[in-house]
Length: 391
Image (cartoon, rainbow, N blue to C red; front, side, top):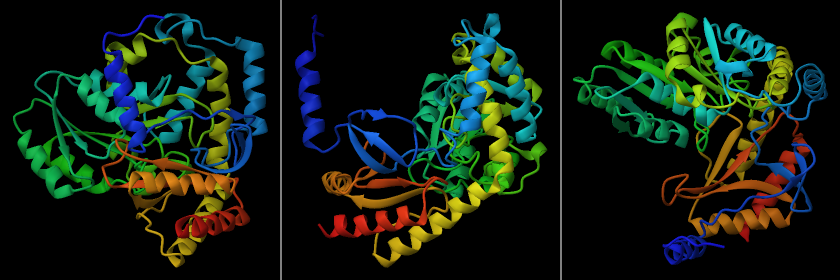
């Protein structure tokens, strides 16, 4: 097999990463996504998926998927702008527009592609994009892809956002970009303050609500609803469907002009095959459950409170989050890895997050909750954490 001319350099870099405790490897899961899963041949109690509402294996969603395959087949076979846009894609876009209260929605194959395509599709040379430093990689990469000037402000620091907007005063157009719920910290962006700044500086706002839709707000309508912002005062909203919705793909919700512009200019929409129609059909079924079954969010909130109370009693270093993402700050990379391994030996799986995903010296356990967890599951987790930290 051929090797790259810089093979030795790559090998050394991989060894350095492994020595630093930052080596990452995929895990093999067998069976449905859920709270009790089989990973690498071992049964585990999982606290590391984004299936917040426990919908990934819901029978109604499975049935909708199977019925759509009988009607539409498996693959879409083409891009949306050719012959890949099915009845189910169109129905889902219309349903999500109603859900968000926005005039139009555009489907993308993944959340990463939605963020890349939206930022690059709306900005050009002479414009400016101003981002929270803790934004998801897809947002930061979207900024890197566009030819617009790049500015960042410290996490949720509205005074320095104001300063960055002043720095970008000569830009033709300005776009403020932020996560809605931050994926590694679990906190919620100060959206009302961001919108106020945007109005003052004649800037637009894009919110990636991948971890907010389905979880917070009325009927799971996300960060905009959480802060009770009127739909006509809402930012451009990006949502993913592979987390709380339990299916796959992503969408952008905005006005007619923004969506039509993305159809013309978002390269990650124009030049890729549409997601399988059956995935869109499954999401239509999922959307009904997200809206109607408030008990899932109620149960999530109960479990989150139970965990936070127990973790505080144990003296764990929690981060200020009211969402299903509950990080426990460890600090040292190798220590975080050791704690995660101790939990795994006890049959519990959590995310062990290290740089560069998070800033240096902020390695953490990323613990996520699902409506499918029980109070007994949370107690088991707390007991295992107590032993792992002591160990």
